[in-house]
Image (cartoon, rainbow over all chains, first blue to last red; front, top):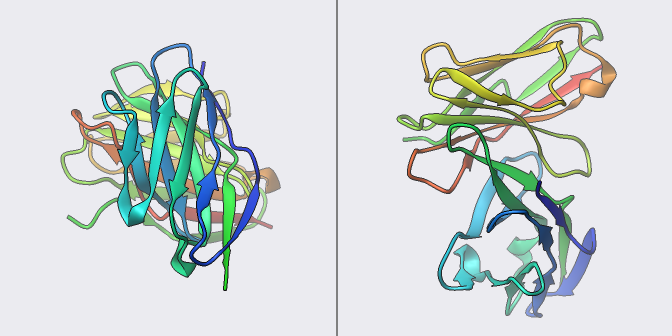
Length: 116
Length: 113
């Protein structure tokens, strides 16, 4: 079984400051890990994913995340926040389903606020 | 390719009524998922199709819920005898065979009054 814990339901940063959103996971198999962003009343957009290989993954809009197996973490960072980054961010871990699909288990989300 | 499309975007219904939502996946994506997202929570898995076969259902999917994907293309999710607790955003996602990335639609927001 898989689970995801996102520490901090709300994070507030100043424009230009570092963004750090925390995610810890639990998985009985080598995980696939994802970060999604959701704007109000919208679906989810993939920011980045880790499947195998390089543990530092780069995504869209300047975001990146590092898979740390020893810490069971997949924290999301961005060096300099922009006002347009204000949104809700979800970390997810993939579990296999019958027939080879990827069922996602999501965390409860972190609302990012960016202040001037 | 316009991505995953869901219809309607919003639905308000009275308790006890039946509702049906539609999802059109990205063409040629053979995997299709339904998720439910309640306020302040992350999406929760409901069910999964590979082509027209429904291969997995969550325990969240009570007997009032039914999903179909008759020709392996679009899918419908029906809720019978709606309850206030069914109020949520219902999200559809599709994925290709060789992908490890699910593409989400914009969701259908259901309000049961």
